[in-house]
Amino acid sequence: MSPEEVAEAVEEIRRRVRQRHKRAAEAVIDDPVRLSVEPLTAARDIAEARSTYIGQVNPRTGGLINSVIQTTKRGIARGLGWFVRGQVEFNDSVIDYMDRNTRAMAEQNETLYQATLKAMQEIADVRKAQIWMEELREAHSKMEMRTLQILRTVETASRRRDVAVQEEYTQALRAASTEIQAKLWGDLAQLKVEHERQIHTELRTIRRKFAASGEPVETRSVSTAVAAPPPSPPASTFDYASFEERFRGDEEFVSVSQAFYLPYFADLPRVVDLGCGRGEFIAELRDRGAEVLGVDLDATALAACREKNIAVERSDIFEFLARQQDSSWDGVMCAHVIEHLPPLHLQELTDLCYRKLRPGGVVAFETPNPGCLAIFAGDFYLDPTHRAPVPSGRMHFHLRESGFGAIEVTERHPAPEVFPELRALDELPQTAAFRQKFFGGLDYAIIARKPTA
Image 1 (spheres, one colour):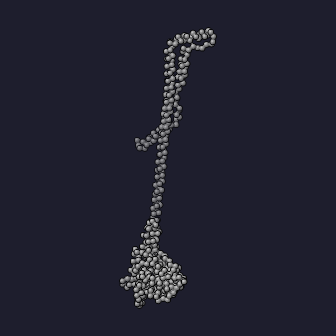
Image 2 (image 1 turned 30 degrees about the vertical axis):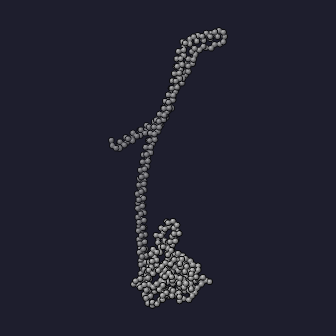
Image 3 (image 1 turned 90 degrees about the vertical axis):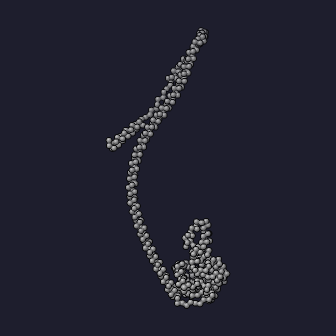
């Protein structure tokens, strides 16, 4: 037989078996016959009644003759008692046997009946189980067919999805490639701008140095030796202008940073900037209509100020202040200068500023904040002209000793913005107080006013 014929024969056998079991399960199971012991019980009752009359005298109506007859019968019955005693005992034994046999048969019948019921129930359960198994096989076959259909559907959908995903991936890859190329060209353009800006800065610095090379070198007194910042060393050994451009920041950066002080000086008519550098701050005040003057020792920085049409003077700041009339200025700005001075000259500087300011005048100092440990990681000692950091408490003391009031101290340039590594301190307990104490602003500004009376 071929495999197909064998499969057909097996399927036919299965069909017949299923049909036969189905008919058997559908057959009604009758209540099994319960054997009756009533005929035996009736015969026992008759035998017991007959046995009871043995040796008994039938009752008769009253009268003398009947009394004599009854007496005679009772006498005869007593006389024959020895003769019928065995029969009476035999009858009692037979009746007792019949009682025991009846009870045993009743119990046996009930046991047989219950066993028959249980067997018939088990047969019915087996038949139901056979039908259930057959239905389960049919359901399993249907489920297999359904599963195969689902698998085919899923496979088809998966292929379509793979195609869609591949197309989406290709599009995303193209978009990412385009974005990367655009970013690359943008970075190259930015790099080109930065490169051109650096070239322009270098050329501007050279031009300023060339313009400053024709200025006479002034003879300075002893006080000039402690001026701030000190004159740049020879270009062959140390280019301070390029150093500031590289590490302090370009003019735009410094201008944005020093905009912090504009609200304090905006309404002051006459302001001097001690150690003005390239003049970023006083250029803003001049544009607002104030009379400004820059004082510095660096010829290159002064050349940068002259390019902006800012009035400048090359002089030591102590010598300059000593030459000014008392109460002749409304504001004094001094940013990143005092850290270049010998510490014992700070009181002299604040005293001079107090005398030269008009009542209500403002003085502002900015310097690296030694309360922030991050400045000692390299920024402070990066500048070889720095002498010693100045704590805000000491500057507060000097200003108070000179007579200033309304003294404000503000930390600037938070260290975590410059050193991202410090953001890990957020995971430490009591982070806010700890970071503010030891890693607050890299610089601080201290601003004071001369009392009006």
